[in-house]
Image 1 (cartoon, rainbow over the protein chains, first blue to last red):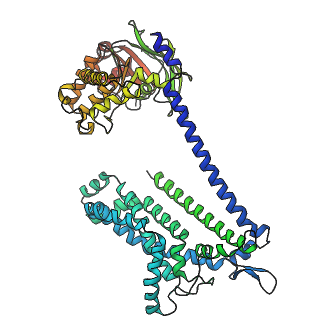
Image 2: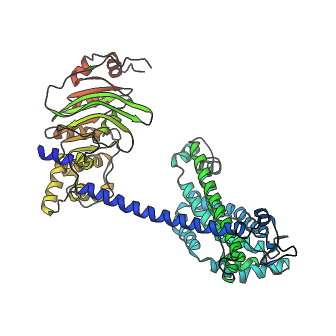
Image 3: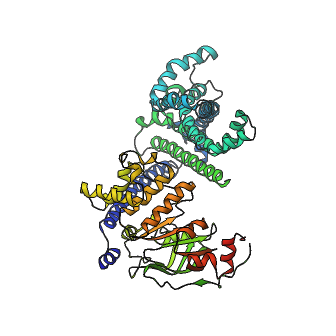
Amino acid sequence: MDEIKKDLQNPSKATHQDYFGRTITYICIAFVGLLVISILYFITTRGIATFTANHVSLWKFLSGTNWNPGLLDKHGNPQIGALPMIVTSFSVTILAAVVATPFALGVALFMTEIAPEKGTKILQPVIELLVGIPSVVYGFIGLSVIVPLIRHAFGGTGFGILAGTLVLFVRVLPTITSLSVDSIKAVPMFYRSASLALGATRWQTIYKVVLRAATPGILTAVIFGMSRAFGEALAVQMVIGNAVLMPHGLLTPSSTLTSQLTTGIGNTTMGTLPNNALWSLALILLLMSLVFNILVRFIGKKGSLKK
Amino acid sequence: MQNYSFDDTHIIDMPLEKAMTTENLQVFYGDNHAMHDATLAFPRYRITALIGASGSGKSTYLRCLNRMNDRIATVKGKIMYRDTDINSKDINVYEVRKHISMVFQRPNPFAKSIRENITFALKRNGIKDKTELNKRVEESLKAAALWDEVKDDLDKSALALSGGQAQRLCIARCVAMKPDILLLDEPASALDPISTAKIEETLQLLRKNYSIIIVTHNMQQASRIADYTAFFHMGHVLEYDKTEKIFTNPQIKATEDYISGNFG
């Protein structure tokens, strides 16, 4: 009797293990937290230096169309206008998402509703394979297949937003597909049974019941795909043309935030204006990925509120 | 729903040896006051049933008894077990749960073999000897009346068992730890009548060596197996007495309405 009473009141091996495990997780989370904070701090201070140390106005940075950080214009101001890159980045991202979403949804529905067996046996590994292909390979294919095709079909150099969009389409398709598959699979079976039992056709069930229930998840998938496209550097850089010019159409060479970063970062010196300007581009990328993240959260919350 | 007075209660003093008691036990989910001043004493080596409608707080109450509400709700009041208030902060909850074990509504065997399901907790508590482990497996399965059905399949997956068998395995899993008290949260509500009957049989066997507290929706079940019965209503314990008194001569109007089906 008394022994049990004593056991109840005293710590045991189990409680010590508990403290030990908890301490380890706290140390890990502290380390990761520190890492994230230092990355944010680093990018932010560097990115802001353009405006604080080099006294470039934020408005000129966001609205200017001349990008030539090494040279001054005739008024003696540095030529740092990031608008062409911002526009191009958004164009390729949005276009790629618009093109990829219907295809991704089609594949996802086929994999989950139409032929679940083939879906899991054949398509799932294919999709996973597509995710795993390095982006430089996509870029290379784009460079040697898509760019010449566009050149023959529409004239011009073939480099530009259209080529970038097509490469990104392949790049984000598997991401959007696999996340959509997850959200459609998460729709409970009894929704389908209930709909079918009320006399709805298979298509009506998929369109009005399954997709409706999976909408928050699918939107999340699209936004994840967009944030992926927005941050993609190498594949886009190889087909976009890398001329910092305001795009006048889908076929003129242009440059995205990421492609300008990868081409420019090796040619500048730490602490100089050209270098700081690139950090400002990185800061924009960081803020955009934050926006995408917040959007995902927001949609997730809104979706779950309906239940 | 009719309004019943919460002041009008009939709770007997436990004449038998007590396994555990609660004093003014209160549970809060955030601001929601889910359990009001429950003072009950549970007899040793008897079966006590907790009955009441859905949302009456009986499961919430049961989960307090081995501190399963720790991270979910705020529990105030005293839970006395072996002259110790196990609801106090500096209590070793892992030891509490070794002696006060719980079986849940849905059978929840691990995705392991039948044998490993039982030896899991034993091994975690430092029992390494093979013969001792095998002995405990056999004993506990016999105690849960499952041995004859599974003795040739001990190394097969527990997920292949039927619902009733799985639930008895869960009971065996608890019994293997030789606890003092078994808490059961509607253990038969997901099972068919035959499995339910077997579970009840098992409980009758276990009653000799364990103090059992069972939450049930099924009033026939309570009247069949329980020695004492407590009636819960909207977070209050309104009546606690011997089972036959509760079912034949309830003292409180709410209890009478509930057991006769005139409730709500």
